[in-house]
Every structure is written in C-alpha cells, then in structure tokens.
Amino acid sequence: MANTPEITFNASQAVSRKPPRHSRRHSSPDVEASSRIGAPPRAPPRAPPPAIIPAAIQPRTPLTLAVPMPAPGALPLLICSIGNPGSIYANTLHSAGHTVLNRLAAHLGAPAFQKDRSLGDGLVTKPPPVEGRGDWTLWQSTAYMNESGKRVRAAWNTWSRALPSEGGDGRLVVVYDELERPLGSVTVRTNAGASAKGHNGLKSIMATMAGKGFVRIGVGIGRPESRESGVVSRYVLRKMTVSEKGQIEGAVEEVVGRLGELGSGRDVR
Image: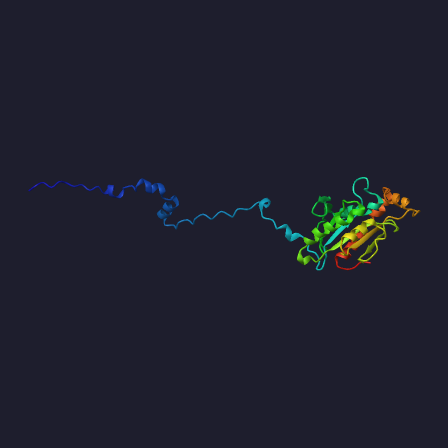
C-alpha cells in the first residue's frame, strides 16, 4: 500500500491572516473603533457657517429710493437772473438779479454754477431735492442786459423740452433789479401783459418769448435823487456798498417763500 503524504494544517495561519494593506490605509479609525465596541458610527461633521460679507462690500440700497418726492402738483421752475456779465459789472445795482441768485444758490445748498452751452450758454446750478418741492433750476444770463431775451428763450426751450410728461409745463421766473422800489424790497408780477417799465432786460425777453408768459421777481435797488438819464445810468452801474449788498441779499428769504408759492401752482401778487 502506497504511503499517503502527510498534510499538516496550521489553524493559526487561517485566523491570523492580515487584511490587505490598502484596506487598513483607507479605513476610518472611527469606524474601526465603533465596529470593535459595537457603538454606532459618529455623525458627520457639521457644515461650516455661512460666510459673513463685510459691510464695506454689502450691496447698498439704491440712492434713488432716498430722493425726496415732490408734492403732488408741485411745478418745476426755471429761475433766471439777468444783468451784465463779467467782473466789471459784478455787484453793480443793475446786476442785483445775479446777486440775489448767487445768494439763493448758497441758501439752498446748491453746488457752484457751471456754464452750460445747451441752456442758452448760461451759468447753471440745481439745488438738492427737498420733500414737497418741485424741481428748481437756477440759471444766470451771460449776455448784456439789453440782449437777455435770446439767451433766456434758448434756455427755456431746452429746459422745458426735457421736462417729464408728468412734471407739468413748468414755470419761467425772471429775477431782475427794479429801479424806484425800496432797496431790498420784493415785487412779484405774474401778469403776462404787465409793462416792462423801461427795463431793457425785460423788454428784450418780452420781444423774444413770442407771447410766452413768465413770472417777474423784482428786487428793489432804490433810486437816485435826480431822474436825469445820465445820473440814473451812473447810479445803476455803480458798485453796491456793503450795506446795500446786505439789504439786497437779505431779500432771499422772501424770494424763497414766493418761489415756493409759485411752485405750488398759485399766482402770487
């Protein structure tokens, strides 16, 4: 009988075989530990909190939402001053309209005047909007007094065409010096047929506006004792004294009130 080869079985080798090396490398220690002691696996880590956007780069509320709205029926105004241009005639009595408009711009917090060729080549500024008030545009003529009409008409035509349809027709207001009236007094005339009373600037505007009515705000500059033409001419073309300028600029408070009434659609007398 042939001898049968002896087969030995090593039980320790059967139970001590190690898992493949790659299994140990990629298994989670937490899962292995939990498997050994019978505990459930740990919950996955929480998601990180959402990033906080610094205030400096957070989107802002559009500025247009903060702009005050005009009162219903508030009319836009083109407020024009007439006088003579240049430093030679600055602060002369005949250019009191410009003096008042300069003071009005400062009173309303408007930026500096800028030349605008599209608006009759005049000097223009706009005060910031105010709740309940319509849009106001301040415009200074850069023409000589007796040539004011063409510039005013050009400014009016451009300005009125740009008005929104819901803004109404708007109103043209002319601020000028008024001889024979007490220094710093304010007179408002809304009658389209009112006389120019010899004022060459008003006569020029009336001749070129083709019947278009406009509001006149006259600021008194007093009068000389003599009515002789040469004396009157020298009087209106001289520089204001400090006291006179103070009285003329002091008219601004009343002018603002009258403009507010005009912008509300009421006729001022």
